Amino acid sequence: MSAFKISPDLSSNAGYGHVEPMEEQAPRFRPASRPRRRAPEPQAEAPKGRALYPFSALVGQEAMKTALLLTTVDPTIGGVLIFGDRGTGKSTAIRALAALLPPMRAVAGCPYSCEPGRPADSCEHCRGLRQGKSLDASVEIPVPVVDLPLGATEDRVVGALDLEKALARGEKAFQPGLLAKAHRGYLYIDEVNLLEDHLVDVLLDVAASGENVVEREGLSIRHPARFVLIGSGNPEEGELRPQLLDRFGLSLDVVTPTDLETRIEVIRRRDAFDRDPHGFCTQWKSKDVALRRRIAAARRRLPLLAVSEDALRRATELCLALGTDGLRGELTLIRAARAMAAWQGAAAVDPEHVKAVGVMALQHRLRRNPLDEARAAVRVERAIEEVFGQDKTGQEKAGQEKAAP
Ligand SMILES: [Zn+2]
Image (tube, rainbow, N blue to C red; front, side, top):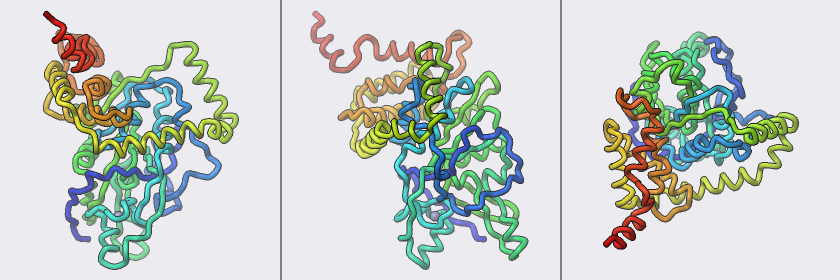
């Protein structure tokens, strides 16, 4: 198989795709020889009759819900890292989020679910179609959410030689892996801090380039793999490499709610869902539909939003005050603020939007300060207080200055 050209132009691939139905509780280790699913394409619908917990019925965990929703408005923010306890509904929230997204159209038969009309240059399947048949045939598929279990082999993650075809027909064909399935959707890694180093290296490469390159077993394959990375983990059980940390656009802490009423409500809803999933989903359907419309409206608004001078200045001041490395912090902060403004239906990106996303965009980018033992979130909050001060907006500030003698 020949080498393919690199496709640089997947950047505006904001569509979300489909993903294989997620298991509610993915086993942490799966045997490498786990039988492949029968369906050759990722187009398989979620099994009929299986309901997913509705996103709008999630109780509390506001930071997590907000961060996840912002990635639907602008997937280029760069993924979400969730620190915290087990059993706080992370996995449920991500699956619910994907189910909330409008289905996406994909080139029929493409193993990477390319977007019709603008297939990835690196997609061998669609290149073949371009030279021959038309690319018109498309299918509607749910946005993919793919689990990357810790025990996954490299073959399963990046793809490998299709042994069946190799043995039966002597063909050197490529069997796509999890990265291929996640294209245009979400890749979820529970306990990402325990991921083996060689898989972290693969992820870093793919996250940077939006492509998976496989050069092994006589294969030379390049295919599109652009997805929103969602990682979760407990930092006390293992540190994340700074390079990987830096790849996540947003991060947040989740904790088990300690408030009595919240806990009661969590249990009440979960119990109602478990007893009658379809009835429960019907009950929440209109709220989920409203959220879906709001996402669509925010996506349309996003490219129209300008960042005010004041917002840009505050964002930069905040990063300077925190001493974040490089400019990725500012860029992410501005992108997240823009997504927040779009989500809120604002006319422009103002300092209040920067303030709202400050902690989640910056807390994982701080260097350790031996003189300051405070949690990163607390340090960011203090810096926000300094930079934004009492005056919440530039207008108020101007007003105060005028009022001064
Ligand atoms: Zn394709």
